[in-house]
Image: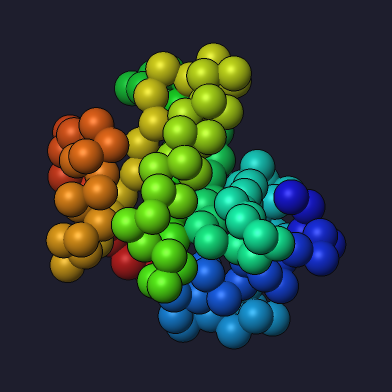
Length: 135
C-alpha cells in the first residue's frame, strides 16, 4: 500500500507492537521515505481490521542473488496463534517467488524467543550472524 493509503491508520497499531518507539507521525514519515526506496508495507485484514502486518523490500546482490528481506513481521498480540502470521508469511513468499527471488530473509532480535519458534515452524534457518556498527 502507498504512503497515503487510509488503511495505514489500521496498520500502525499492529506495527507499533513491534516498533514501540514510533509515534504514528514518525511511522508515516519513515514509511514515506522508505517507500521511495522500495520498502513496502502489507497488512492482513479480517473483518475489516488489521490482524498482522509486514514490511519488506526486494534486493539483489552477489551473495544472495535476488531476495526479499522482511524488515518487520508482526501479528497483533490479541490475534497470535490464530494463523494470521502464517498466512501473511505465505503471502510474502508468493510475492518473493513472483519477483524472481531465490530466498526470503530476515533478522530477529536475540531476545524474541517466541518469534524464533514461529520462524523455525515456518521453515527458516539461522544462516549467519548479523553484525552492526553504529555510526
